[in-house]
Image (tube, rainbow, N blue to C red):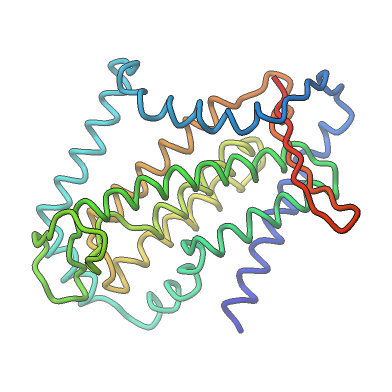
Length: 278
């Protein structure tokens, strides 16, 4: 009960911060609407294609970032067992308590519920930026989760909780239960937190709060002996860069959302109306 209460309070806090932050822009003129139902869904295909082909367009700075992620993951991999032993030796009631509270933030169902709630509030308040943040969070979560699932099924690393060494990998399989690399909770937390932080970079403390909660969620996986440090680092970094790219590709010079979903109900049937503003 306490954990559920904490999550509800957190969702309410983030939603309130987002709404109040956009209140100053409510009177700004809206760009002309261009309807294109298929355009919205096509944007997912475009973004997916851009993510896959992005290395072909990277500059020196992008390759440096990729190198740091790969290098950081490799360095942590070498020290995974020592980091895990230290974390378990210093694990206490405080670290367990923090982990218990933040762990749900990395659960995909909880993240989807929070995104849906954020979008619903945005609709009720006619808050375009809140709707955009919710939709981009959803897209970021989809692509980050796809990457995570792909690596899990391709590698099947043993979790530290199994008692296996850090370097035990079973290779490709669709049914192997060993799926330590990468961390799904860390990926989920950072895929949403990064969007919120970027879309509301002008709101005091909100980016810091979002990233802090995501970092604690990632660290909780090490504390709980469910993941190695390299699992968590790679997931957090990859989700951050995927979310950052998606947010950047959907930047609107007028500060308004180009994405819109509307549920339509009538005559006993329900429809989903999609609009993409070019």
